[in-house]
Length: 189
Length: 123
Image (cartoon, rainbow over all chains, first blue to last red; front, side):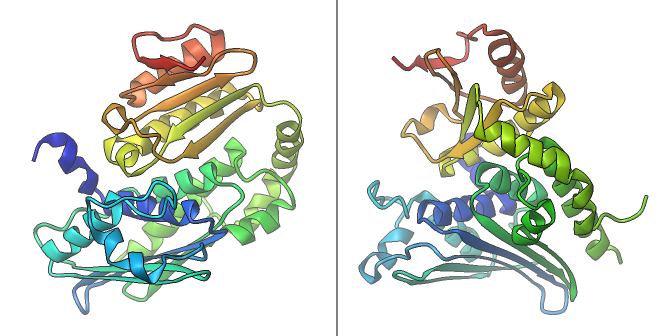
């Protein structure tokens, strides 16, 4: 594999961004992103749940085929097959649950100490990209490190702003700092 | 420094509301970062990050930054489209942080299309 193709998996945070974009394209207005890091059971779990239009049952298998795409539904692509493969490579698990009209949930786990596990990377950066690019959609980001939790819910942010623009540069700067501080806190030994 | 809480956002409420008012009025510039799987894999998030810093520094509330999906030109990702009102949109290709900064400073702020990085001018 050359550099370009290898770059997709250089950070798990990019997979999160990618899967969340699927939900956005499926017409979701609420997307919940969870990250769980556990030393106890040696697992890293990530999940993305959206309330978009869901995937029809007959397409569920197909969306995991890297060579399948439907440009009309915009709900599939290379992204899911890439993360599924990453999970398989790291002794992990991949689950895709979708109900038409209700939404889709992608749950992936990885063996935390697997040598091929890509770093989690800049989750704050991925969250900020999502929030900034989609002010009309709400995001919940829930990160758990061995029982210590950080949570960001843009519905609460919008509530505090009372109609103010969530994409205002000062607000975005605040949110980035807020996420970085929150993550540093739950990572403290 | 005290830990930030969500309640601290109240301090930003007034400027954020002003920004909403402006947004509903004039948007002179729209910058789209294409963020499909291909764009993300090629570095679109870093491009977005650099763009965000530039917009913050420029203090221009008439500039809108949005994301969109893949536009079918995956091999030229990361792609960025700059639309300035009254001008033809320009699609830039193979963007990175530095190219994004240059496009922002030269094209967005002073109107010089950076033809070296341009993929197409949309007529």
